[in-house]
Amino acid sequence: MNTVFDKPHALTDVPFHYCPGCTHGIVHRLVAEVMDELGIEGKTVGIASVGCSVFSYNYFNCDMVQAAHGRAPAVATGVKRAKPENVVFTYQGDGDLAAIGTAETVHAATRGENITIIFINNAIYGMTGGQMAPTSLVGQITQTTPYGRKVETQGYPIRVCEMLSTLEGAAYLERVSVDDVKNIKNAKKAIKKAFEYQIAGKGFALVEVLSTCPTNWGMSPVEALDWLRTNLKEHYPLGVYKDKEAEINE
Amino acid sequence: MEKLLMKGNEAIAEAAIRAGCRHFYGYPITPQTEVSAYMSKKMPKVGGLFLQSESEVAAINMVYGSAAAGVRTMTSSSSPGISLKAEGISYIAGADLPCVILNIVRGGPGLGGIQPAQSDYFQATKGGGHGDYHLVVLAPSSIQECVDLTFEAFDIADTYRLPVMIMGDGMLGQMMEPVVFGDHKGRELPSKDWACNGTQLKREHNIVNSLYIDPQVLEDTVLARQKKYDYILENEVKYETDSVEDADIVLVAYGTIGRVAKNAMLKARAEGIKVGLVRPITLWPFPSKALNDIASTAKAFISVEMSMGQMVEDVRLAVNGKAPVYFTGRTGGIIPQPTEILAKIKEVSGGIK
Image 1 (cartoon, rainbow over the protein chains, first blue to last red):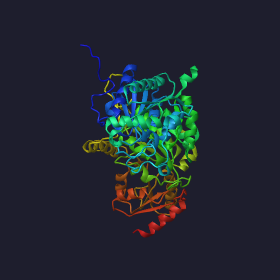
Image 2 (image 1 turned 180 degrees about the vertical axis):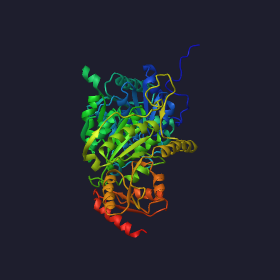
Image 3 (image 1 turned 120 degrees about the horizontal axis):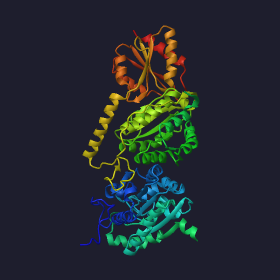
Image 4 (image 1 turned 30 degrees about the horizontal axis):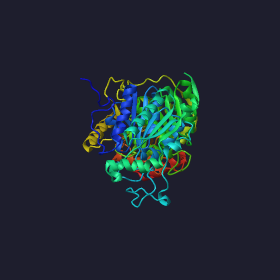
């Protein structure tokens, strides 16, 4: 009998703890499939961040380093600069990357650190029970914005890909989504490209993945996917925000 | 052997490089910026890396990453910057990673001053960062000792898998003295098979981590780490004594003040007062047993510090009521003069039988 479908080798046998409908499961799988296809599991070091994905060190089969909240890009810098032959990636949520870790994110990008960042943007803080994230939309109801995010009090959300695209050090930035099969396939392509950029020594690569959080959005998984399509995609347009290789070829 | 006249900050940087450190992450802050400046010039020449990070927070996390990858790595800062590193230091300790952190202490709290101080003793020896952990804290009092203890720091870090702090002060950082680098006879070190540097698909994946959600597992981890600390308490205490055998009054002082106190001791002896000196070289582990033994014959102790009195509490604990323990010192970045210390000695001497 032929095996036509299997768990990627780069994922361990530990069952995920994620909520039903959480898109972390999809993205973990995409990252692991890419590791398998590129044959890099043996030389990859992943940096786990703090958020719902904090236990990702138990889910990926490569060496994993747990970082403090927001510090993953600095930790990744420390690993990559010590072992440039290793492939180093971080896996971070919106609080980790764009709130407490903003400085580390911006400076890793502007230094052109040759790392790959997988950025899960679900516009909310999942692990701690649904507080406002820097990417939460104006009017969005969260635990800490129970009357909806107000511009006068909480200001505006951050568009990470757009912001980082102003930095010369950033080599590849793309925003994708995982809300349907077509988008998932495209997301995988982007993640693969982000790893390939690192392997080719092309510099800093980040993929922003629009994701759902049914539990904290207070919706069913299917409703959450709809909400992503109607609301998140409008504010965070999908697309390539930086591609140094493409620019060179023009 | 060649004698070089070097400034403390630069001597420590050179010693680190000779100890095999090839990854240094730093951020400018007075009075230790010369460490980064020296590293930025020297590291490229030896195939190493100096990276100026965006903050002290980033620097300690870069150290965490390089340490996790299995290399000798170091950062340096001064008091306010060390406060910023507190989180990272706790994580490094909790993940049992080796590294060296240099603190060239300046006046505090807050933005404080840029002159020498010893007001980070509590921060260094009682935690600084959150949770149950300890740093080995080394306190040099000459530039030569700065160099020797830098070699030691890396060895201790690698032997026990923990962060080691070298506690200097603004005086040591800035002053110049002759140093000899010599051949350092290093310890035999365990292999770093726990490091995260790629499984090569030949072993189980390594995880560098400090999160243990199950409280029993976390307790077990902390207890196991305590065994490490117990061994260090038994085997790594370092201190120097001077004239304590017949001393009535014993000064306890470290770092720059260790030398000032010695001058005060000599002045006192010249006036017929029997004074001795204990100079802790490891602030953690603290030379408690040595002090307790000396307390059997000494009549009083005076802790001399550039602070409001922090080490004095450990002296008191060590002496354990066998003799009175006093404190004298200056703060704000002021270095006490031998005459001031002598005045305190006389005051104490007048009061003891």
